Image (cartoon, rainbow, N blue to C red):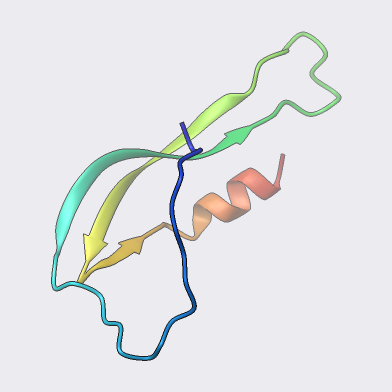
Length: 71
């Protein structure tokens, strides 16, 4: 599920990512919906990726953005 509750505030400039590098496992990136030419397919396909934190930042493969935009 992509929906969650969270509180956000404006950064004050003192933030830094935690020094954590680890594999997080499979994570949902987006849902890929069928185009109009495929009338038989009714359901969206989930697009997953192997999530990884590198020095506290989530690494998302750039090719996923192209894959989902090309729907």
